Image 1 (tube, helix red, strand yellow):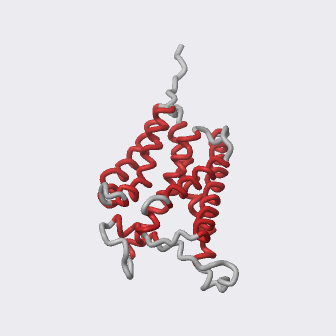
Image 2 (tube, rainbow, N blue to C red):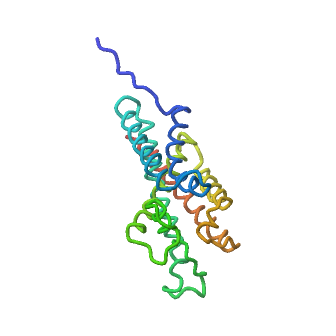
Image 3 (tube, rainbow, N blue to C red):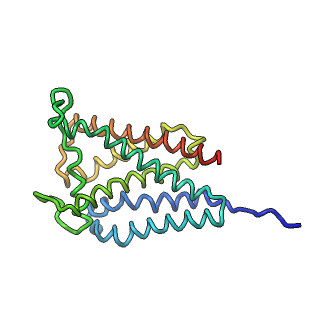
Length: 228
């Protein structure tokens, strides 16, 4: 008679804390540069990229030797975060292309995507302010932007544990709180962003859209995963 295979539960508070810490290294890339701790390039290469590999290793380890909840939670958070980032950018498109689309009379034109090439330049060790950014800087900057979306998704799952048992609106609170906190960092000054009432309203609305997308998508993915 053979005993039933016992699977280990890894989605514990301590490992959720580790997952949160590893995922938050994406956001930390900017912050350490802003506060002069080290360059974004150095942090990306020595901390953020190894953290991504560590997250992947944890997920694979859990799928092979655990009950899979940690691995699935990381994957669900990553997927939901990417989709939420796409919804976030779609919401901002009319503001970015208001003049080109002939809707400037209705929606105020705002250059909401201007920071992305700057992100890439910082990762490449270049000046954050350039007249014309390279293709590499633009691609890296957009990739970093979506890595933040994925990272916030993973952080959200690490906080709430099980999206099936938590209301999706918690994701809105998290997204808006993160953006509000970022406005109090050197972020606006570094990227020459005028923190006007219009900007605050639009960026908070965009992050609320991100939160709605993240919360609902994570909940849907979690329910689908548990049904199989």
